[in-house]
Image 1 (cartoon, rainbow, N blue to C red):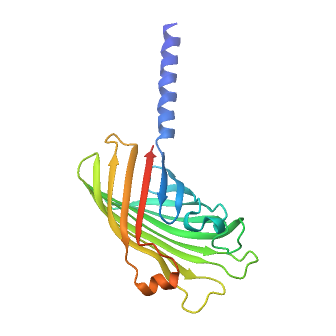
Image 2: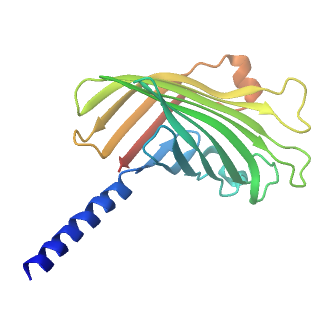
Image 3: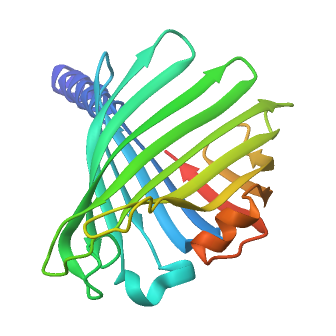
Length: 242
């Protein structure tokens, strides 16, 4: 009986160790976001692997925001790889599939209306924190001769005052870059914003909240060309990492 009990305990411990090993490679962050242009949108990003190269995936459930009526329940889902560079950077190239009605210009939701190759670089060393993102949104022809392409990028850099509180600066730009049947010299920015951010986080990890704000840096000519006025920018995020 003692031998049986001992074997059962050993089996339980072995299964538990393997279970922990299976769980360790997986991580995921989920956040709820709201900003002045894109409106409300949930976001998730996950990875599987312990290096040197991880499999990554992400998704964005865009609500439509400033032009939601023509975006067609816009959805973005993508996969890629992630790997560390040195001790301070985590580089994550991905490619996303777009579904909806924004980049295709179709005016009605359609599966695979476009793609978005994108790059995210996480920055962290000591008390320094930051992130760089760039994505190029390219529309496919689904029967509408006019498609829409966009460039979206940002850079966030900040400092952890302590394990609970961080602050820094955020720069972000979204631009229309043309597409099929676009006029000559079509490009213009919807907004160019720079301003501060503050972040509160659970010192033990997990939950966090961040608020970003800033002014619009566009010239009068750029505002007129875009036909879109946005004198300020703000974004609120609450999320959890596990």
